[in-house]
Length: 174
Image (cartoon, rainbow, N blue to C red; front, side, top):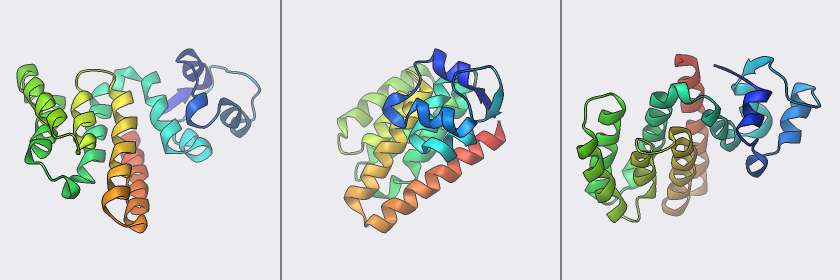
């Protein structure tokens, strides 16, 4: 999947996630242009958070980003203590695939919100309501934080590496 520097800049750049200057330098540019390049280039130069932030520049793929948010949360599903969170993930996935109603999603969202410790699930469900790219970014962060808080550093790092693989797979499937 490709993106342009101009698309990224039109969406406010991403100073908070890794640096516009870093991306420009990696592309050998000094300003934004319309030359397409693989979104994985952002992953290589600026990291996963910046690459996920760039998904907001590609809203035509929101269904994919919703499913990506769910997959990030699924990576830490084994750490979820509240069954409402797992149910919320199931409903979010069904909704992204057109198999659940908005009403069912609303109930799942409220249930996941009430299960306050399982923020990765809540963010994944929120993807169906708001900006799917935003949800992917925050689901990844919260899944990593959940692994970090409930597992070893090695397991948290492994979860982050898995997120990068899931991200690459989502881009390849597009």
